[in-house]
Length: 437
Image 1 (cartoon, rainbow, N blue to C red):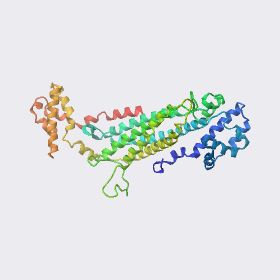
Image 2 (tube, rainbow, N blue to C red; image 1 turned 90 degrees about the vertical axis):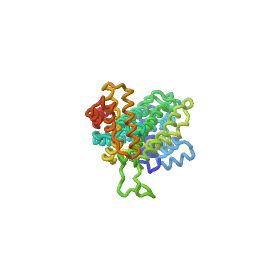
Image 3 (cartoon, rainbow, N blue to C red; image 1 turned 120 degrees about the vertical axis):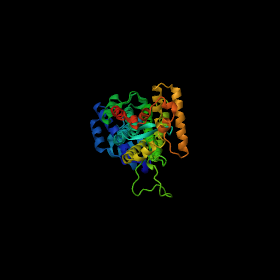
Image 4 (cartoon, rainbow, N blue to C red; image 1 turned 180 degrees about the horizontal axis):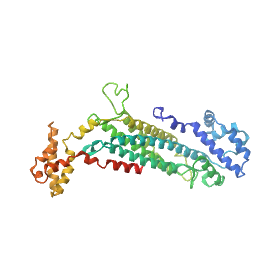
């Protein structure tokens, strides 16, 4: 991933130095177990921990000849360890190191992503509770529907990210498995107790059945989960972009002092953060299909999955980590224009109260079909007047309709036009979301 969209802590997980450190720990813990089993001298295991070193540039140089990264690493390790290096990698195959190390890296990445989700949830919780009593127009198909709470609009995203957090924890635990089972996974050349020891030391679980590799359905689920989290990020970003549109202007992402929106138009305040989040979500989701395709491999092992994972393992986790951090900052700094919210709410002359009038008529004895016709005909008249630039009041239009007046008194109609009616359960709904998270 390019530095522009990378954060140091996540990027460090995928640096060669961290990868080789994990490789070394796998080999060293395996030697400890082998020494306890009497397969290799205990002094050799101790010597590996004492003298074990590696150099990234030297490994790269050796790999130019070996065309094999694990052998290049072992060769460089032997240059530091000396004769006892002959006991390293006893009975193991390259996949034992590669797959177990990848599991460690994915676990490390997941821990950071969970931390990132915690930041998003904390920011959303604060903004939800600030805006639960703010009545705003709800929209379906992009069209004014009925009022809702601006806080509930945000709470919807809170609930989604809370579910994402649970999914990511499950995906992390599922992918964090260790395989030290030797060629084609039979343990013929390495005792299963070695695998158990390495797994315990690295904070992993033992893979149930490995072939020569850890089954890739685990990885597919992991990256599919990242794709779902990314889609939740984009869902918020899309809402933010719509709310910031000039025609809406109900909320705006932070715009820093000295920030420029356009090279040509000085007035522009573009939703660049939200648009960037949409783009980053596409990068993360791009890893899902290859991860699914990696599940199908030849017999006990092939490497068609390898190059794919070396690219999207870092890219997907780094992009999502950056996106979660950026989203947290956007939510923290989001400007909410309550006056504009109220203006938009009332911009259609009260048409959003149509269902309440419909229900009041049915309760007054009018059939649903007739009630719908009466309310809709008045609503359409108000709509056309507004389209012509004329002021229009849905309430007054209904009061002037004799067929409606026969069924509903002015007081009964007035009772239908209460905005607070729509948000009276907002806090209960929010408490449900908190309880479920």
